[in-house]
Length: 237
Image (tube, rainbow, N blue to C red; front, side, top):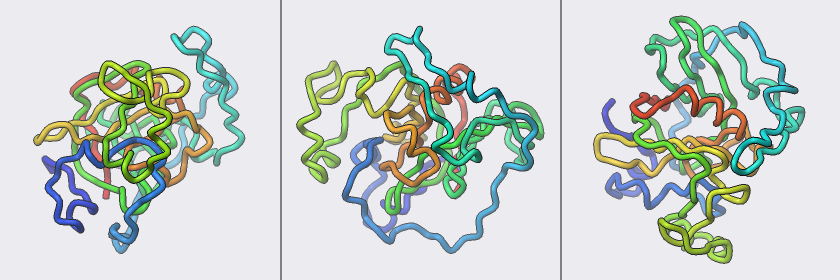
């Protein structure tokens, strides 16, 4: 699959120009009823092989340019905490596979093994599936919402200031992109979707975003170190 398949575009008849619709934040005006939920779901992940010391994994990161606070991991389902699992898919090592139905992301470590992370994914009407590549990566990136998102939620406007990329929120503890962002491109160019951190780690494991793939900051830093530019990203339907 060479390009993104988007329920929103198919339903509305819009051309697949993506940056206008993806804002990576909790936008309060979703378009409901556009997702195909009839297909059976089968997760690529199997049994847990090992779990890290979560007290250490989700501790604060004071050495970051903007300190990452400790994550109270007890507030989310343990299924959404980082762990090494048996991997049942056939993807090559180094591939990122996102399972939106399970709200989990897999980094394929080796044949039959993957690191699994809990993620927040798009709400109803903002889901998508397909294949892309990480074309660009940024540490503590600025967040510049598309004008369509601001139009849907005018309250966003009061948060915005001038950045090098336009009106937005500068990279730092207030930016909805969190500590890291990996920018997803398809054959047609920038999809507008990102894998990124969050200021709301308690939302991991939920359908909450405007289509972006949201991770706990500690987890997105961990993935960022392993997924260079050129990494293939597969988002399951």
